Image (cartoon, rainbow, N blue to C red; front, side, top):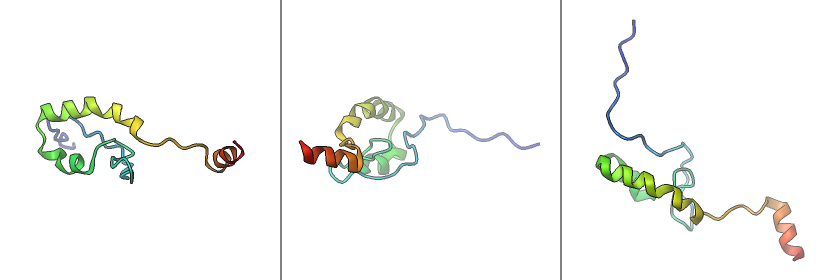
Length: 79
């Protein structure tokens, strides 16, 4: 019988394994955290983590949306 898995009583990370910092917005395109927030995550208090988790969804709008690749560029050129 396997021993039970040890779990910590702390909030999960918002990381979704898409770890790329957007060059202009300076936030991760996967979780919307800044590089500093990612680096400091393990030292945040549970309250700080909860607050950041509440703030992250609002950051999604900071990222430029794709315009449809080649089709979008061609459409823009005709306008």
